[in-house]
Image 1 (tube, helix red, strand yellow):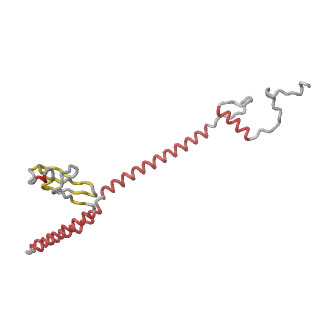
Image 2 (cartoon, rainbow, N blue to C red):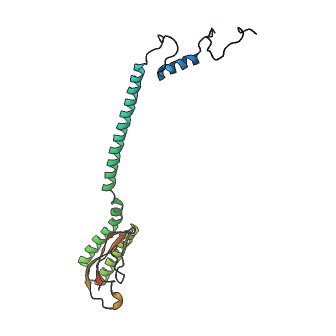
Length: 197
């Protein structure tokens, strides 16, 4: 056996191939340059990083940021204006439904000046009052029924305490000075009551 034919595979052999450099090989070399490792060779053919491309990309990003910020500011102003408009016209629906009741009251006041029939005037006032109650109930307003109920600090405001006329009225509402109201099951006015002691 001759030792000439045995090649030591652990020792790197020089590459004597004359294959052309492919695009993939260039990309690998460029990736090595960007990552900080220099490819084998003198390094004279490596191009510097294009700062013009980075500058133009920065300008595009800055423009996008400014446009987005301007859009957000416009949105914020528009929603603030819409909120103010909504608050200023929030009771418009209620006012429109109350106008017929106001008209009825005006007609009743004119009729009271010239009428001598008190019973007819009372009946007219009762009709207007019931119409007003229906309008308010249609908008979610409900009166509280407090008299005879146990005192509840979430619904009632105690004005004073009187001795209870009977034993079973102790701690309960014996009289109502001012009626309380609920709007869609939320207290909008507490009932002012007298509690039995």
